[in-house]
Image 1: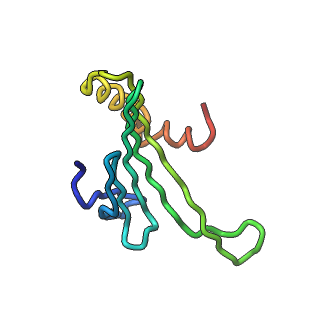
Image 2: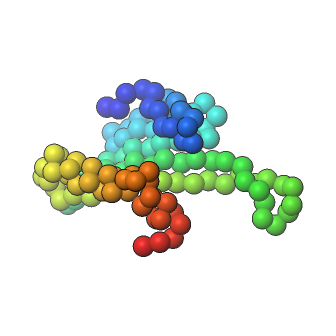
Length: 118
């Protein structure tokens, strides 16, 4: 079980996410204002899938009306999909490798990814 609260740092600001729900499949966490949310879900079948979803709601400038803001939502997902019985340590090593690639050189590959490069 994940500890509570979970902390996610966005733009240098730590967001404390308290547990807001649990189920046999996972758990939900959120800040008090629900502007930041994290859901963890596990599914078991022919394949095993573990997903963490982080959602941020924010106000942004309305592109159609000058001087007006609109609420927007952004989601980041990480899903680990393995065959049943796959070794946890092996799966972790693959995830660690991908995260290291994305975050290397101050997140250069993340910048490229969200900038539309491939």
